[in-house]
Image (cartoon, protein in one colour):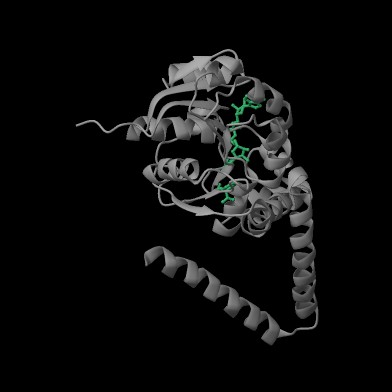
Length: 294
Ligand SMILES: NC(=O)c1ccc[n+]([C@@H]2O[C@H](COP(=O)([O-])OP(=O)(O)OC[C@H]3O[C@@H](n4cnc5c(N)ncnc54)[C@H](O)[C@@H]3O)[C@@H](O)[C@H]2O)c1
Ligand SMILES: O=C(O)C(=O)C[C@]1(C(=O)O)C=C[C@@H](O)C=C1
């Protein structure tokens, strides 16, 4: 017996890592009757066609016309220009969602353009890799990962439930959150770690040439882990930092103070302070592992 898809027609705008993973996961689970795709890049559209991810259109309007759910999966900096185009094409009763890594900026850029009768439910899967583009996606990306939804006040709860069901069928656990809270949480769990990784790798590459080659030669797992994160897409991450400025600057201020305290402890030989800090952080890691195994 075939199950009824959750949405008869889903439009995906931006068929990169996340958009193509959504298409693959929906195809695998038969969650959408039909998938329509638009991407601004002709190369990405051609790849989506070749990979058979859905019906690829050369115009955004054709990809969203008659869609019951439209998911925007482009870098945050591209949202503002998309707003008016989406407003012209969405059908009444449709859900407009997205996967952007910052949520207040999405509400700011798309919110004013959402037509009457369209349910606006921004979202963000806490799942990804350092790779980009349609060929990098995979159907299992969202399995066992959180997906955060930030519906605007007054959103029809049936629409939110339907979108939640889609993420759950793709293997995610779903949490509902205020956009500002989302941005604060992600500033520490995702944005700051990326900034630190970009900095460490950049510092290493600016060392004298002789030391640089040693860095590559002797990079064991610690530095290597940072290089993976620091290989993440420059456009995506530029847009995240420019659009989650306040929360990132706030957490960066606290981080800098803590780093300075450790610097001081090293300078003055305060072994107890270093030991106490490292013991506390070890517990955090053990807590994450235990929570995963529970
Ligand atoms: N990569 C991750 O780990 C990750 C995880 C969760 C959420 N996100 C968020 O998902 C979104 C997409 O990220 P990604 O990793 O899939 O990026 P990606 O670079 O792999 O894909 C983005 C796609 O959007 C297209 N695009 C850009 N501007 C467009 C426009 N105006 N109209 C249509 N298409 C356009 C690009 O051509 C590209 O194919 C971003 O907002 C990002 O913050 C990324
Ligand atoms: O695993 C990775 O490569 C990621 O960086 C994924 C990650 C994260 O920081 O956890 C990156 C950005 C997203 O918005 C969500 C997930």
